[in-house]
Length: 74
Image 1: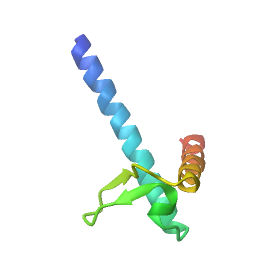
Image 2 (image 1 turned 90 degrees about the horizontal axis):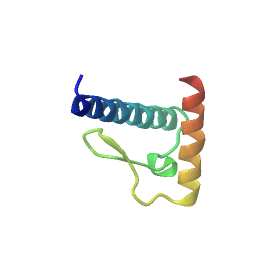
Image 3 (image 1 turned 180 degrees about the vertical axis):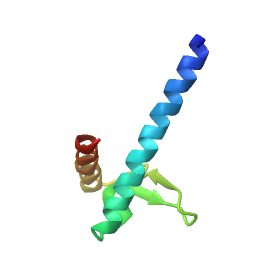
């Protein structure tokens, strides 16, 4: 594989890993009756999930806590 192909492949894997983390946090929030805003997520009406640009300190801490749980299970 060429160097460019390796870079693009790594970028794709990194993006997929981040997307899986966001889905996990969103599912965790839904199962535990947490508002997505309270865990640092923004959910579009079509279901697309992104990290909140300016989360509160409490939401950011909650996101990190859930992300650690995700990383322990992976």
